[in-house]
Image (cartoon, rainbow, N blue to C red; front, side, top):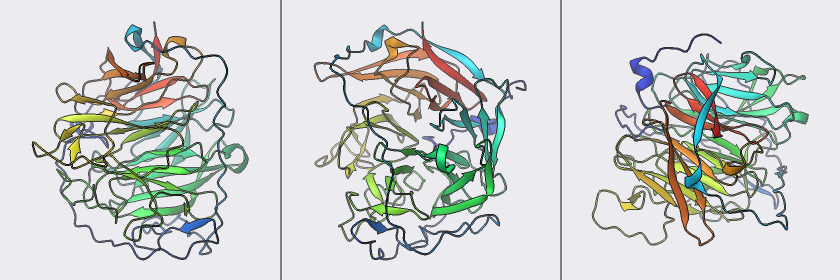
Length: 445
């Protein structure tokens, strides 16, 4: 590809995972309406509200979703059954990590992922509104989707931020994106790929959910399918500093949460087993709350465990862990706590909160980017270890549970990368996404 782009002052701003709070807020205006009658014994319809609409007003190519509520029939992704052979306990501190370049010359990359369709292709999301596809034999990435005409990316934390492929993408060609529109609001949309799956059709957009954003920061941005076949999405607390809009502990909004949706039909619907469906005052989409900006989270492809990296305010970055099979509904504490520490007070009531399993204090680092548990075959010493990093310092850590129930957490690498995200190839190898324009492979020497 072209020579790596020189960094500008704008790219030095922390992007969607940023702990900085310099954005000028806009007032929150949307209010959710009552939840519609659920489809018989299967799903609760997404609220028909200004914050969950089926159209993108600024995009002439978006397609209005059908009005009929579909029956929820998510395709579950099976979690591999455990084997009789015991897995050796990983030794995190023994690793000697290095970065190997995979692609260069990119424009503000924020995600790298795969389609799970057997092609081995790598898909790279650029913040401005483009998705590139890099095949195993390609010398450089090829265009896959361009929606720059509808993406707003003027703020360092806005733009095209998330991408997830339908678990049955090889058959149905569906994929989902998370972006900021030209009004500064969050949109989750479905798109259709071409018959040969080489390109996405910009005109096929069906907006599944739109959320007003009161400020230009803390926009979240992650999308991922869980082992249950449902789509999970992370939204920040609405921005400003110190949970200015009181969303972190407010169950009446999806800001500051991870939501869980069934997107197997024409419209998004809420699974009937979402944890807050029966709570009248709560948004039924919510899977977990008390999050400041869950910029990147991931599911362990072997176990189904959920790992959530939540960006801190002024002092602490945190990693949260939710075991597979958990019914959801966790309160991760923001703004009562930042990491394991009371926020804005010497004392606080932490009853009912789920505390992080790892944290680190600001210093050279300031903004956590969550990664993945390694499940590839090329780096056996990395097997079963969760890797995460920091956007500001370029540091990378490894985290794993020990046999004694204690967590091993070690800083393993100092790099020059602005780590906006990690990525996972179809074969389970791990990637590091440098916002400055490079994708690296994470290896052990």
